[in-house]
Length: 288
Image (cartoon, rainbow, N blue to C red; front, side, top):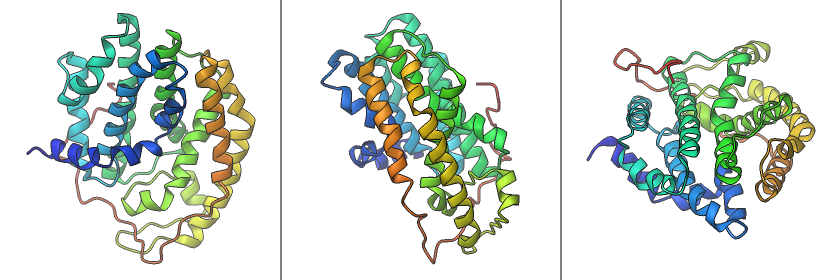
C-alpha cells in the first residue's frame, strides 16, 4: 500500500469528527437545507479539501506530504485526476459550467500552494516574515470563500482591503488556536519579527518556552480579536448570497468567544522539528 493511500485511510476513518472543526464545512453544513442543489456540489468539494488538509497536516511526515501534494497538483493540472479527485471532484464538476470549473481549479491550486509552503516551512525550519505570513493567510483561507462564491453565485467574490484583513485575522486565529500543537510538530507559524520581539527560542527536543509564548499569545490574541470585530461585516460585501454570508458572519464573530480560551500548556511538550531534508525533493515555489 502506498503511503498516500495509507494516510488517506488513516484520516478517512476520522473524517466525520474532523469535519466538525473544519471552517469550510462548518458554514457549509448550515446551508444544506437552504440550497440543497448548491450543497450537493459543494459537499464533495469540501470533503476533498478536508482530506487534503489532513493528509498534509503537520502531524504527518513532512516529505511524503510534500510528494503527495505535488502529485495532487500534477493530476489537477493534467486533467486526468488522482483517485481522490475522481472520487470527490469529478462528480461535483459534472454539475458545474466550464467557467466555474476553471475558477475552482484555480482556487484549488492556491490551496495546494499554501500547503506546499507549510510543509516547506517544516522542512527548512526558517520562519516567515510578517509580510510573508500575511501572504500565506490569503493562500490557505481565501480559496474557501472563493469556492463558495463560484458555486453559489456563479461569480468570483469581490476582494477589498477589509476582506483581506478579515481573512488574515481568520488565519491568525487558527495559528493561535493550534500554536503549541504546531510547535510540537515542528511547524513555526510565528513571524521572524515576533520571534525577535518576544525572545522566543525554539530548540529541538527541548521544552517549549511557555513564558515567552504566553506573552506572544496574549498580545496577538488582542490584535486578532480587534481585527475580527472590525472586519467581520465585510463578508456581506464580497457578493456571496445571504444564505452563505450570514452563517459565515456568525462563524467569524463566534471566534471572539473562543479567543477567551487560554493558551494550551503541557509541561512535557517539546519542539520537535522533522528529521527530513529538502535535498531529495523538488519544491513548487511560486510556479503554482
